[in-house]
Length: 500
Ligand code: FAD
Ligand code: DLZ
Ligand code: SF4
Image (cartoon, rainbow, N blue to C red; front, side):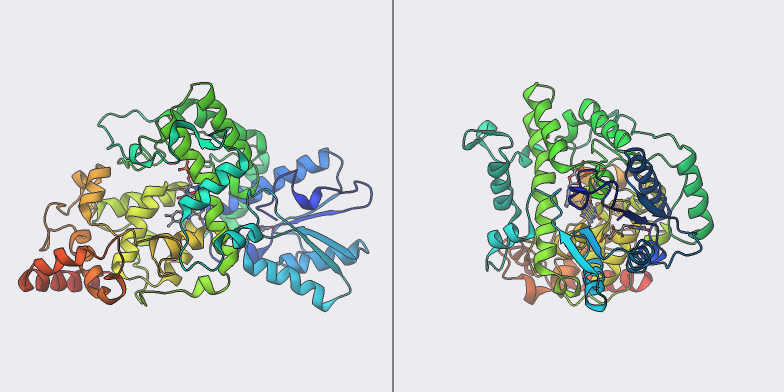
């Protein structure tokens, strides 16, 4: 599958080059079950074609079905059936698909035919779903930090004996530097478009022209070599400042000091442990400080594994959660970037161009707004799955429903990441170029985040007052007095009815 592009993948482990056939297929169903960003489809198809070419060069027998092949049935299951028949084979071996809907589909092959289906563990991850379930036990709430410490110990990462290097497990408090003026951010990796990528770009332009996003310029790496170069460039040029500016946002700087490797990790061109080891090595060679290295490693062996664990533990019910009973449609500007709120305009425009936004843009701007505006999780999830080239349901859903929308009632995170305009103003320079005034609390010119924050708390009082990390905000709200509260409700109502 398109996110299994690792030659060490479990399904290939005992592959017999003479007898076995490797099936890879570009299928309409996968490309349209949500209307993925054009750049995302081009990236996956090009990476798949390059991977198939590499397998063939290594002597494997590969059946690669292009999207426009006349006999292409349009689905993974359809293609699997067709190939089993064509090659008179009875055994299908797959690495556990990363999404629930695909596992269900593949399993159903077994029921209706004489085919045997062997689903193997996806051992590219550091923690199996079973290990995660054992760790989670019957707890009503999970916390990433404790899971992360277990991963550090189990894989002996940044440890001195049984203790964490530096004496602390987590250096997050050092990772909130306010972005300085004139910070010179290194340029990102720009891959060359070879003939395979050019052909794919033409295909996507023709067949998916109506999907969201800009197809060109196309600069993603599409091979393992290219992805390794991206990792190397990150370690050499960005890692040192990754920690300091992890939460910072700057106008027209979409890439900041982040690594931009999620596309490659999630489709298999890079493996999590090799990235972690390379970064740990840079620390031991004194090429990067501990706050950067620990912060980066935590994202991969902590957050990435944690959200996957929750996905497999809680699916399929997790996708239906809606703790706040949020009902709003997604405002149209999420697709057009046509909004006077500069922070949202920036993050959406960059998403449209790059199929990428960094974590704090996703969390504190795009996610925060959807939470405060009460957008139905179904629409928010769909948007996040469409627009990012690294988005697959296993990682997108827990981040959206759990982290930004608190739709699971606090299973994944201890509080909703709700914030007013002052947070965005502190961590970015967006407010300087905005039509709204971040210092104004009410009225037409006031930053909408300011009143929407209180409106969100007010509307969800019963559900949040008992939360020990956010509950105390109600004391501040109650001290504001009735007039101020009335204005908050009035401004919020007017603003929310103006967005469609
Ligand atoms: P860096 O900041 O350099 O971090 C390094 C790596 O850590 C990332 O490549 C990623 O593999 C991992 N990582 C960091 N944070 C997380 C996290 N919260 N969950 C899982 N892995 C993490 N990440 C995806 O890979 N796919 C998604 O669809 C996705 N959707 C998100 C939706 C929302 C609302 C939020 C708040 C976060 C989402 N993330 C998602 C997590 C994170 O934003 C991206 O992994 C990150 O921005 C990718 O850019 P990077 O490679 O430059 O990351
Ligand atoms: C995302 C994606 C797209 C756009 N297209 C394909 C495809 O044509 N063929 C394929 O095998 N995989 C594709 N993918 C990735 C799959 O959606 C991903 O492998 C599943 O989500 C795994 O469960
Ligand atoms: Fe965003 Fe408010 Fe700042 Fe404008 S003033 S950029 S809406 S936070």
